[in-house]
Length: 116
Image: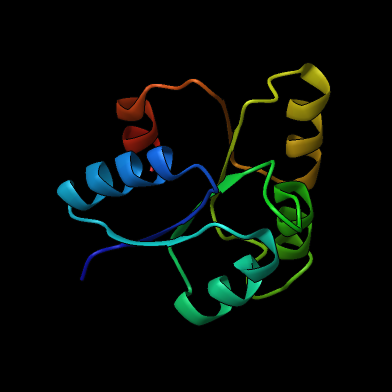
């Protein structure tokens, strides 16, 4: 059975590229572009990994990560944060909230696939 990756990202080109590469490597991929719907999607798909953008419509990736880490069910769910905000304070906040990996845009798609 293949592992499921949930991509929570609002940039269509990034979603399309990541989904293609992950599917090519045998992953099942689900995508969502709105932060407000992300937690419900995690609940319904129960992914093995979440790739989470920081800047999303309606609810930020930081807020989503905080909710995931506050849940006993998803506290240990691996989360990779993606962001164009590469400032030290953003990296520190992601680490404080419990992100497993923090990657700044632009990034290497092969790096992302390897980390997943």
